[in-house]
Image (tube, rainbow, N blue to C red):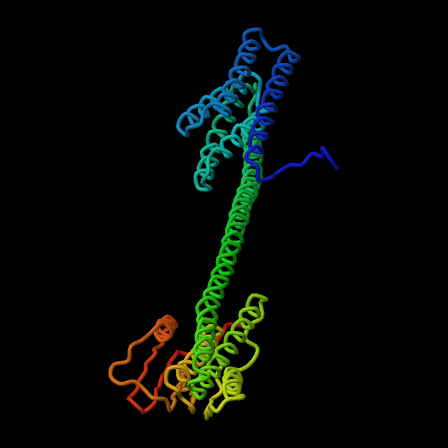
Length: 405
């Protein structure tokens, strides 16, 4: 329903509303006291003094409530209020004294923040009230008695005590609402910031993953397709003069093309949000089968079960393709041995071939250098060894970090 009135108990304005109501109530009581004094036929001097005290008391309470902000001036005004209340009670009696005291004290309670200070203020006020009531009772009553005086003081103190308890409860309730509202607001702000940060992080991760996939396609597939073109061009030139070499070039190009196609499929799967679905050993067997299919290349393998992270999984697969391709293309290898060993906290991939090997120091090209850098980035190592006519051997060691689920 539009325009429905709603009180926000945690709003700072609620205190201002209560203060305004208390000042208005004090003014009403002051008017009632003046009217009662007139109806009782109070002497002219006393009547005008009563009016003056009520006006000054109302003005002081208004200034103390809405103008004075510091503690010491407020206590000075409270002392002046007490003196005026005593004067009014001496002139007119004690009928409204406890009520006026409760109004003035409630205003002070709302200004004082600490519970201890409020309690001290209450105790001092009780002493002032007892003294003021006693003085007023003795002066304004023709035949004062101890019983009536003590009874009046006790009833007044009871009223002040009830006012103190109610004021403390309401102020505690208000303070708790303020704290809860502030805590909820901070929690909402923190949640909003966390959601924004999470969205930004998610976008960043998506962009990073896309860039990584694009780089994989550019580096691996682009390199493979370039090699395919080079091998097929070389095969065309050798097909008449050296058919055996030409066939070898075509076989190597075929392997490279298959590797490039498989890499494209993996990249498409990753872009579609699908992770690795097959065990690492199964992927290795499939790559070896593709390499041997329709060629004279042979392969033996010994594969342990392993479940590394997706990134490590992809790296091992891509490394195997690169090493097989290099062995066939550069080393003229016809046989390979592949070992995947799960050695506790490390995963070890060993690839060796029977190719021509390397005479002297091994010079890392684009492919081998990329494998070393990636292995080190994953916290592992990459090493190679070779001798002329003794084949080529590469070893990758990675720490096993399983994908979080």
